[in-house]
Image (cartoon, rainbow, N blue to C red):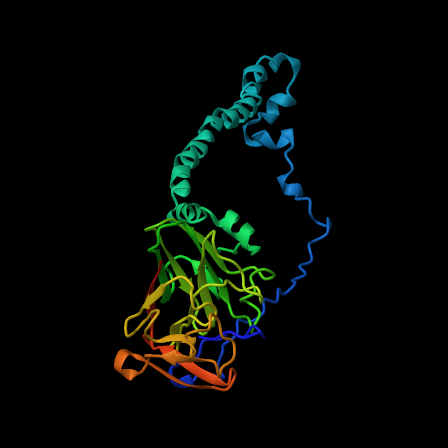
Length: 332
């Protein structure tokens, strides 16, 4: 869509209708909960304290034999034997049942392979190839790469708003994505991007987005670099998902950048259609709203544009579904 020396970024809805509706991602404020623990007062449950006398079945004791004369002493002897007998036997029964305990452990061990074969975990492992080396060369931060809904951008396909990213090139490339966060998110040399996935040639990955969160993505290879403001000096894929959302390919950061195609359900944006680029083809980059424009994008091909007061230039792009959208993004 646009870029400026003031590191401005926000994707606008078709016709510029969303120029003042950026839907910034809310700050995460962790509420501190102070839960008071009970003191040691009353912590001891005396009913649970085991005494040896509790194991005696008092109803089975022959009280008359206890107080009988010595001549009757032989009688209580066999009768008294059952009293101590239940106590040791009852205590032995507890350890005798102990061998059953390992069974849950064995079943949990058997369940471990299922956890290890988690497709999301496997996916994250697969898409980290080359990330560290490319990020290090760029001087960029490695992405958060969350695997569940975080209110922004995460790896997976559990949102109604998605991108399917495919590496159509011939070399391993890292695909960075970031939330606009006002105008600072694009500077991935000082801010941690939301996504940095490494894709070998022909590989793909699904990314999920929350609605109404202005965001952008860009591929970076070993030959790429960062622009002066800390953004990826390549072609960008910009998007704000939602009922009135839009997406576009933006070339005005680097007119000679990597080729990107974004195909949605209603419109396609690529290097020539529904694309932001410099008005003067001799320029390699253009920052001001007066120096770039939205080309070949109108209602005939599912797009549209309008004036963007933020950038004092054109805004807009491809329209999308009102209840969900999956954009197939291919770079090469």
